[in-house]
Length: 539
Ligand code: PEP
Ligand code: MG
Image (tube, rainbow, N blue to C red; front, side):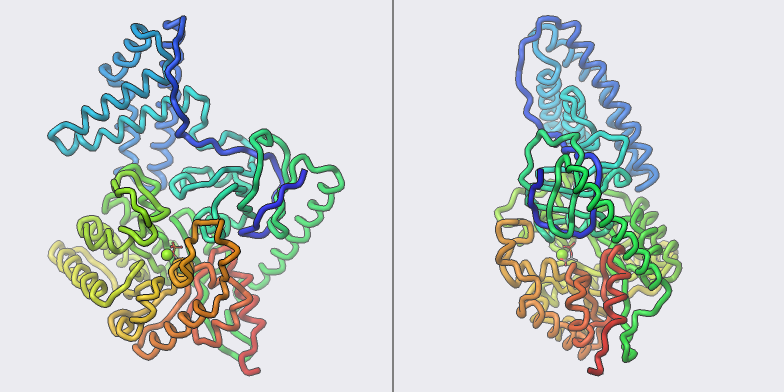
């Protein structure tokens, strides 16, 4: 069976299909006859949930540090709480209800009780008790913790995947993403590019393909379920050809990013976390042009501390050993939601309370991140950039806060390095203000994903609009041109870190515009290098 879809990243994947199960299934009240057996079911689920939390603790300890990991220990203790356990078992026994229902009601009751307490620490526990209850419920319902369970790499099939879900996935078990919804610029698509695995969106699949064998053709945009031997053979060959092409690109490692007529451009990589650094080095990027720091927040159940962040930034800076590492401050909101920020539901979250707006309104969160960034800057070549800028005033305010942070560090005798400051140009307002903004900062980095969304008034998350979406729209290209010209006039260098930077059909255009740097997914570095080296700007 062949199901058509839209490719968001090329490549061929062959393997088992595994349907991603969301953890938010509905809980129904049901009558049970054998309450003792139901209590036993609950106890078994609680034990499993604890084992999952212990594993999460170990994972978090390695990836984000002790302070962030600690929450998983607290969760394990909460599961063991006598009052909590008694409430559940008592309800099963006296009301003869199913364990899922008893856990859900107890979770709600306890959460309301905590929320009403006059103590900030206890108030925060309201979300935790909900969280552990949901975990036990999903174990009872047979959903696996990671959203899919497999010991072999699979093609992951999902309705859609939120960034908070993708960060939890075991990346070593993913061959490809296939989703029903999602769009070309969604973060699932960006993740697929970072991981260098094919991805399809808009695939109208039925649940019964779970566990069947599949082939993803990320070039033609097709998913084959239970392919016949002829199709299998065709794709085995195609996969070999792809591997050969990749091998040829490997020969470009160590080569300069220079056109035939001698124009050189910097080629950096985009990353989402410490775990992406090895692929930056393997693909021979000269630096990191965009570290999406919000993924540290997405991976955590509570605000990452200064120490957690410092460790992550320092580790990246040290591993990059003096090469430039541009870290973008928190860009939370819109499609990147984090529960503990308690952001209100908004009609238009992409144009809502997000990114730098949160940081300027909640300077404590911002300062914690800036302190961690400046402290880490002592250990490498860190630059900082700020997302979603719309005015010069915002930049002035940011610079004041940066000065406050530096003063604090001076007062504490904490060392930091020379840090270049830049802004993302990803709103039309910023483009129009580039002349003034260039005088305030060292560099611009053009976020074409959002810039295209706002310039064309096309929601980047809405697949319904793909037909109207023109990545090469002249309005976007003119905005880039204007940004480069005004940036240079004001003494700022200019890069592109949105997905368009990796579009090799535009490499020559960008070079002719005078773009100084391109930052692309690690997996695209060598292909873009090949495109640069094929250009001759003298013609
Ligand atoms: C962009 O908007 O182009 C960008 C690089 O940021 P993000 O995709 O994380 O919004
Ligand atoms: Mg953006």
